[in-house]
Image (cartoon, rainbow, N blue to C red):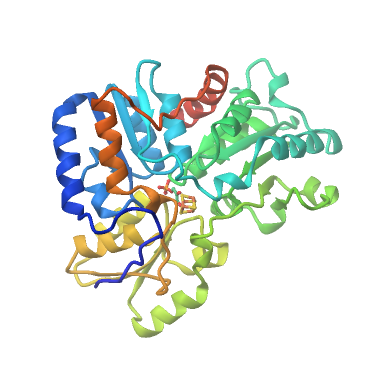
Length: 380
Ligand code: 13P
Ligand code: SF4
């Protein structure tokens, strides 16, 4: 089935056909050979994905970056993904993006000053301990320990990952959130807590999967005065952030699809609201969603709660299945969509000309703190 995707407004000359950009990109890739690796997130448009050397969810792409030996990594995704790639690659490798304007609005919902303020309030008012005070924060804590362990979703700035790394915490993605939260709880101790940011939904959905109840979780909104008695009863303090794309999915949409197609299978991303995840048949990362559609039997009707470029691509890839976006008013991630083939062509050509721009470079101190949190994740 084909859904029409509206073009995000941009200053690209749409009269120049994708074919011209395709030719420029292919020519540049040929000239660069092994010197360059193009990584593409699943939410990228088709005219970018066709040029990617590897595609994946943010976990797989961070692994690909860590394992790559290419001199240049051109990251077609959003800013925090390219930052992680820079942190995980060696000093000789150069990470860049076709445009650095492609950020993530959810990642921007948590910043270091706000998180530090929350951190100090929790430590002081709830009498929790900073894992920094431990000789080895990676060691499993005791039942009577009360550490506050920070966990950041991959969708966060390098500065926040560094904060987490410094304080004995860990990064997670939607692929490994359960294993990571188990890791964090075991380092917090029986009386400790986990501070999870920035996506409250991934935190909540994962904690429920681990068997916790709503009273074990509390939302932290830096604009509100915290209720410390509520927080002291909770095990998880969830930052108030959310994804504007995934919050568009509703239980109503699932019910309507099931009314029209009683055998429809429903899969959603865990950045969706708890009720949406509960009403779905399955939830997982973008790569999980891809595999779910791939593995579904021929003739399946699958309602998907995630970004439209991925849903449309899956629908074209499996013509024997009907793969629909749950939100029929279409939900693109506008920042992922900023990566246009013209920018990719220009980026590759700038590498050839030796005047590379759009470089993502994280300073040494931030990198060395953030890598601790990223490596803990890669080891889980
Ligand atoms: P994945 O890690 O599942 O690819 O998710 C990244 C993302 O930004 C989803 O909105
Ligand atoms: Fe960020 Fe949401 Fe876009 Fe993912 S879909 S990159 S979480 S804004």
